[in-house]
Image 1 (cartoon, one colour):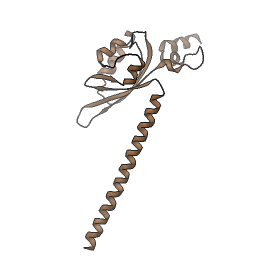
Image 2: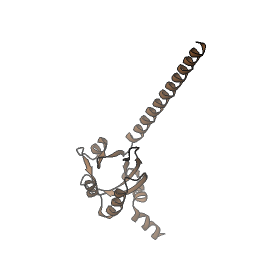
Image 3: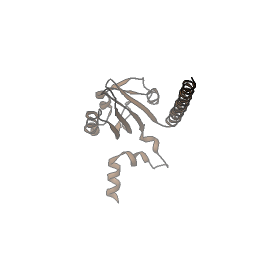
Length: 169
């Protein structure tokens, strides 16, 4: 009876310890989620995910563009991009089911007001059942102006700007 009681107390102790770890992990995860949400909220950064071969952009993006929320098929998204980027983006699409991180800078015209530089960052993970999940962030380069007349977006996003700067030096 003493060994059975000791075993029961030991199991109860292990159970309580594991519950405490689980509670701390959930708290830390919630804290991290909230911190990320605040960081994104204070910038022109938006989240997206891929569901059933459609790109789902968060509602705040559509509000920022004064547009009604919708999903994009790959072809729809490609039609918003400047033709100079189509081959690069098609290559990313062909490889989206492979695990890894990708950063791509492309000009897009989502609202018909002209092309702007956008950076898409995403990660694809392989799911245990054999599928995959892709999701990421994207942000507009126009928000990176620093001084009047100096446009960091052009400097950081536009490869033609970089080439022209190298040629002029």
